[in-house]
Image (cartoon, rainbow, N blue to C red):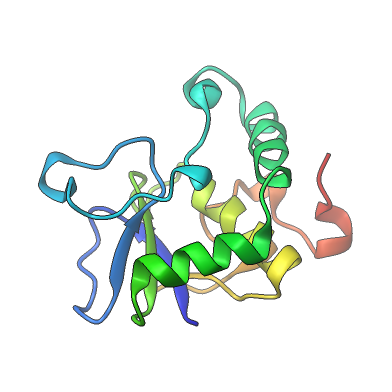
Length: 141
């Protein structure tokens, strides 16, 4: 299955099934499915980037990667999946979708790229520069 990450603001080809991984989607996209398990917790705006990473990977550690991929497949209904949230692809802000890519790479062997950009897993472009590394260095918590 093909899975990419992107922003609610990116125009995706129609073959992609948009799936929100944000705490909420823009009003115009309220009807797209949401995978709440990948939405960051309530702490998401109240911690620094290193604590964000720690909290988010603790959250992901409670998930079954295979079940998560199956949920994505079900929501995508046979189409390539686009996991979406708010951060624009080319701005300097990091985004939890980079951590999703790293987690899916480590736990399910998937290469989840940012749509239209290079880098997946621990080289995903929405990871903070300090958190980009090879898998051996990036094992979390």
